[in-house]
Image (cartoon, rainbow, N blue to C red):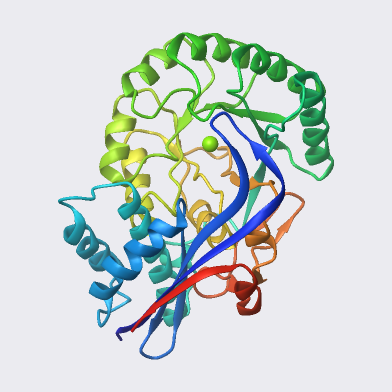
Length: 383
Ligand code: MG
């Protein structure tokens, strides 16, 4: 079997209303999908998390031409081929993100060829469904009191949809953040709440906000600090009870080994469409497991990313082993995204805030080619 053709699809949708987090506002959704076709016509799909135009160039002009003619089933071999081709100048960043989308497409293709779902290829499923948590409560351009009210109403809406866990955005400014943390807990006394600062704080701010999260029994404090500051994560952890979560900006087993062995992080959050793909996420899980840390992927893309994360969580052993160990939890981004909700003939099924692990071969989701054209910015093809 040989790789015969590689296509990339840059897709875009302009949002009706922008939404913000601690770093900037989004007014469009963009993604880069990768389609790999074998010489027998079997097709695999992947996705890259990040700047689509740059990924498109990396795949169509660098990795793609080198992959043509190689065996698509040799996923680990091809990952290390790509690593070796680009190691000297691209140990991470965009090149690793591009490798991630290619790797996900190869796993989808391999599953379809062998008649196995990706979670079966990963070693088998521990669970057939994965409960989701709602990611939402992004900022809007309005006065802070009105914003706080609007965010609480949004969160209550998720609870009414069946979500037992959800994640709010913080990092706007510490005074607003601590008011929101308390008000959200008051409105949702029995909901599992997490808070994500998207690396907005310095260490003293993170300590003060973290103490408020402790007081209100939040389940994790996500990206309190910039990902470079591994020592500060360790210092923060020593002052707080709330578990620290991070990793969506980190890549490869080597990056996670450095981050996690510094001792500050209790929940690792690689994005499968950025960290190095499924192949590398499994190695990251092994590194994390060796330190007693669970992996809860970051997931903010289309149904391809969501399917990959669902299979990953379905196939994951939870540390520590225990008869009543807590279950896996899947990030379900609730922000408007037609590239997730209108692009798939067969999506991941979500009912009562819980994802059903696809059982069809490969990732188990099917792209609607008509919808693909509707969102298309630019397509490339090499063969
Ligand atoms: Mg985050």
